[in-house]
Amino acid sequence: MNVLDFSKRKAANHPISMVTCYDCWSARVLNDTEIDTLLVGDSLAMVMHGFDSTVHATVEMMVLHVSAVRRGAPDKFVVGDMPFLSVRKGTAFAMDSVQELMRAGSNAVKIEGEAGHLDLMAHVVESGVPVMGHLGLTPQSVEAFGGHKVQGRNEGQAAQILESAKRLEQAGCFALVLECIPAELGRLVTREIGIPTIGIGAGPHTDGQVLVLQDMLGMSPCFKPKFLRHYADGHGMIEAAVNRFHQDIGSRAFPARAECYG
Ligand code: KIV
Image 1 (tube, helix red, strand yellow):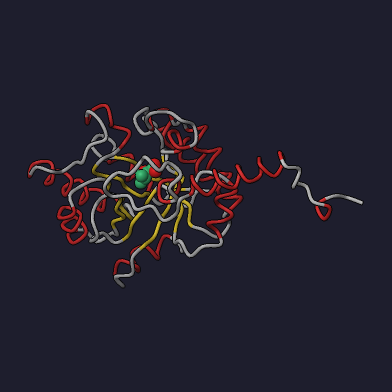
Image 2 (cartoon, rainbow, N blue to C red):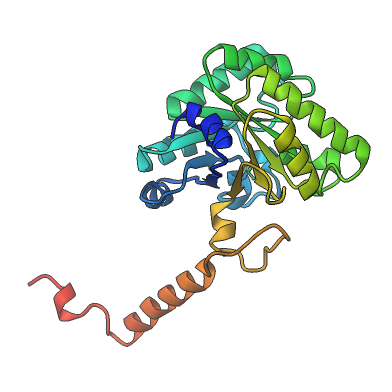
């Protein structure tokens, strides 16, 4: 998959699959899967570092995780998130951050929102860096939204999201993440713009879907927002394996003779 394939997939009505990935060992596994693209999302601040929101992600953290993912998944298209406020501190800071993310191994960067930094997004595109947009529930604005809430439920908000999507397409974004919006709005935006939409909690009509890897693997069984499907009981599987190891140590069943050096 390369950046040009995204629009081809929309034209062919062939859905795009994306999962988040933050580290080298899961990147190695994902490199062997059919998944189309990996997102080193700033959600790593929550999933990998235990913070309560993505505002804690820094450029330094993103670069470290992007480079780990690139080493583990040399064959995948990797999108690196521009973290909290990195596009609001002036062009020089933003471009330095883009440069670091690209040098770490990103094929593209993702930037949340558009109001107030649309020109900057166009500048990044014109500099030869593919940009993925992100509208709807943009988690870096969680405090302004008063929590992680579905966006675009009323007509005014929905119209704003649609207009923003059109502006992002005009600015040169190659794809757009739509997060936590009503399915009808997901359908409308997808129909009205020429670039592919990738939804998370945006219904079935988007041109692709993305989930956080640990969420879809069921690593936190109690975390089950409406849009999430668990594809495995990752928590239970690891818990059972580690408990078996613990018990084998206690009973001296591990290591066996075949696991010892002569
Ligand atoms: O950071 C992230 O994981 C994301 C996805 C939820 C789209 O932006």
